[in-house]
Length: 165
Image (tube, rainbow, N blue to C red; front, side, top):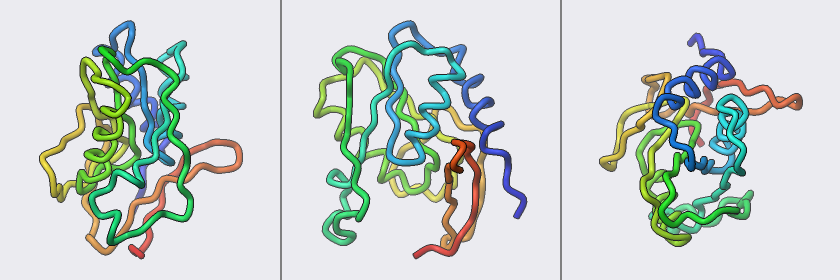
């Protein structure tokens, strides 16, 4: 499978977001791929405010089955969520469960004015009624495959496909 350039996708995603950006919009990235994308979007969109970082491990509805992920990162929301427009950023949208968990966690910080979802890739096969507001790539993979966004040592993002664990 020929995979697109993730850096070019970040630029395309920024241009999809730009016309709908409000002055007080803040980005919130989901660890870890969403955080990488949110950082790149902040730079490309020229946003001055900090981004939020969340790890949804404890908010997953399958936490009992999956247990605690070995690399849990702390959540950090360095701004007031109350009444703010938020853009939730992730690398891949698949079942919708991670997005649902992220929204649940965000409401623990306050009630945002709105939440929009930006992702680099949409795999389809949703289990929940969730869709991306901004997405440059719709991709179909076998359910046994996993789409992985990685960051190289220099920070450059790239895609790979692997067999699901």
